[in-house]
Image (cartoon, rainbow, N blue to C red):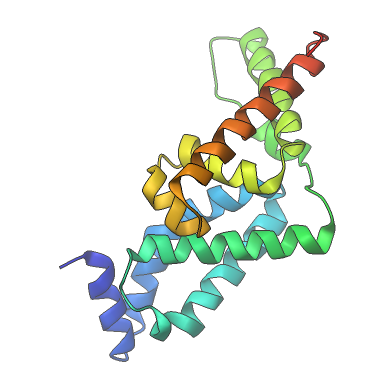
Length: 182
């Protein structure tokens, strides 16, 4: 039996430990997805907490027709879409960009990495949220097209199209930032 199902049954049986185990297992992934989509550390944490509150309050409605992670990621997507609708556009977070550079051999290498990451994050801001979501689930989270289609409630063809369009948007934004004609 799936570990997630055991945790869910434990929680539904009255033992809070089951929910705690689900949070421990998924909290980093949820936070990473939210942060990849909106870019704000504090707001990402708030949205992640909101997601787990929704899971806590609605876990009884999970039917088990799909994997728990698919159900959870759908909640994440809904929370992020709700946030972005309320804000009107994506936000950027210079601190997150500056703190995410991988350590390399020297200051010059770190600077180059930070500049590339900043350029990529800036370009990602301009990718429409529905395209960006599919791209992040595929390229950052490593989910399959089938999993993404279940999370986004659309066909595999739509997922493929969104990923392709996200990459085209990203390419265009990066070319513009680099001073090349698109």
